[in-house]
Amino acid sequence: MNKTGSRLQRSLTKVFANLHHFFTHRTARAIGFAFAADSLMFGSWVTHIPHVKTTLGLNDAQLGLALFGMPLGLLLMNPVSPMLLHRAGLVNTTIWSTLAMAISFALPIWMPSQWALMGALFLVGLSIAVLNVAINTCATHVENAEGIYIMSSCHGMWSMGGMLGSGASAILIAAGVSPHWHLGVLALLVMAGAWWGIRPALAGVPEAEDSDAGGSKFVLPTRDLLLMIFIGLSVSLCEGVAFDWSAVYLRDSLGATAQVAALGFSCFSLTMMAMRFTGDVLIPRFGERALLYFSAVLSIAAILVIILSGVPAVGILGFLLLGAGVALGAPILFNAAARVPGLAPGAGLATYATFSFVGFLAGPPVIGFVGETYGFGVAFGAVAILVVLAIPAIRRVRL
Image (cartoon, one colour):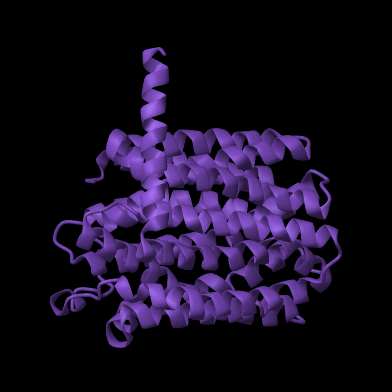
């Protein structure tokens, strides 16, 4: 065996050993399933956005405005989420926010108008704001307490949930299953799994020390945190391209059927999941900065493939590449935000989460407005330009 083959074998061995440790670690696995529950509902919802758009008779701009409900809810709730964690306890907050998330994601499909849809998505934003801070804090506490790497694998579970959710949706759409039944039954299953499956295993998550609780508040960003937020914004917008607009773009712009259009997000989630499950090995080996550069370059290339695609197959290939491009951005930046000099871990994490996820959820509506006026080529191209502008920030930020 040559040296390249030997290095590849050693790398794969490390990846599988890390994954084996993750899935046999009861607490880490439970946190991962909480990540997956969130994206399972999210991935199932986004594949039905074209159905909602058609049913309510919305154009891209009107749909974009309705989608603003989610970031509005998140913006309101995220700054106070650390206080909820401190008062209710990390484990209790994680479970109850998971239940609220499942219920809220089942609501938008039933809404009769654009404004009702916006209100339902506002409730979704409230619940996922709390859940996002809670599950990332759980992962950080376990890493710090046990000296292990699980953050990227947890985000890999999030990607896996999104892939399974969107993939199952594609099958159910093809089978003619009502989106109302799909999301309603799925919400009940997620709630049952969270209460009887995840809740007992989360008992192993260390709660915050009292000394840290006071620092687990939203704070004004420092220079390094601002740079991380800007980089995270570019990553979040790339994710938003896939989450909210992949199915619409493949169906309306490239002429794909509804079930084929759902595969764009499935392929995006597949490569994102694969990269994230290797991230806890890749990050220590290659370093956070080098991998952020890699993410930026691949994301730009992927968006160009999507823009230039003329048929659904090439568009799906672009979303496949985009998933690999953005995969490691979130786990790297969440961990980096938790160790910004001069800030308590909870403060950096909560502040970064607020801004990055507002970008993640507010970006797609903006893409919708631009897409309606100038076309999706211009809208997606603007996201690629923002990623180009983030490259100097990657060079300057302290990691």
